[in-house]
Image (cartoon, rainbow, N blue to C red; front, side, top):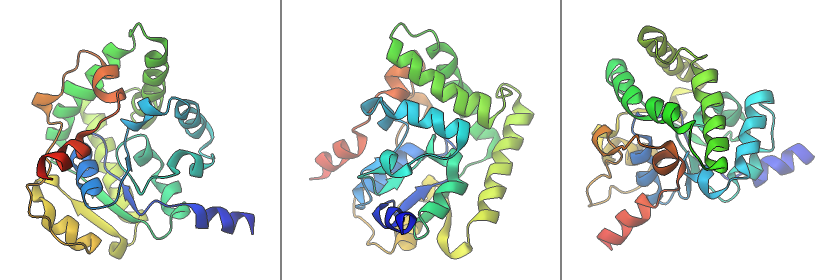
Length: 234
């Protein structure tokens, strides 16, 4: 009964399966505008520093109380969540899964010039809390997902492709949307069975707007992008 009761309490309705730099910031903003917010993204960890230890524990054992992490959230996108897709699709059996993707070479060039560089430079951040969070991210993504070989283009792209193939094998077709954010609202809203908004789709955080001076300022800090978008169209 305990396990059943725990599952009933969990609330995620949408899980984003795509790696960072596949449009996850745009997807977060879009989901929140459509009513699937708040949406958990790497940005959220800055607002909840106690989550750092939880993600470290998840990375070591893959067995944590996911309810603590996602309490109050209706969706989750980007890392760290997408690194635990297999666990999440079983814990949230009715959640729909959105696999954001893009051309593999374009993804790698974008990741190298933004998040990979930021994670390298951010390791020297003077703020202890920032360093702790960056260490968690590095362990999970650079050393975990890419086994330390993120600067090897061929290996990183192969890892990216295998992730996509794995998601397609794991998730039933009726539960999965393969999605490029350049497609805009229509396929996303059709998949979620919600009306298509009349406003422009929120394409956010492209490579040119991503400043790699510090990970703490641009990846770790919380984001109010979806709320700002709502304010502009209100």
